Image (cartoon, rainbow, N blue to C red; front, side, top):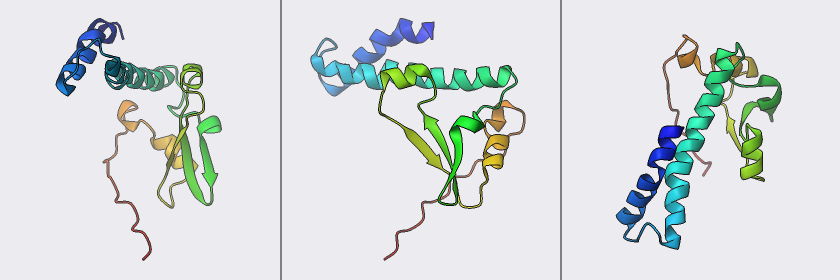
Length: 131
């Protein structure tokens, strides 16, 4: 995180210059949000998971984040921390698992790469819409 802070101004300035405006332009707020802030947020989320694993906990808080809805397993992925709730109040994100994936499977397989049980990653196409 300190290294992100050290390079934040340069990262935001590079984004602004690439889009054709000065780093001190009001438009550069977008480059702060999409550059250093987004990088710090994603790094913080990864650290949150790694710290849970290091503490002997599951990477996903099953009781708070994993649920079933209309027969499918759903994982609430945002907000996770108090800072998330404070800084982005009202925003939320969830991931719906493919049919047949149970809450137990989600908890058992989450962050397998960091727990020594990596499985092949597959991206499945979205179901096609009915005509």
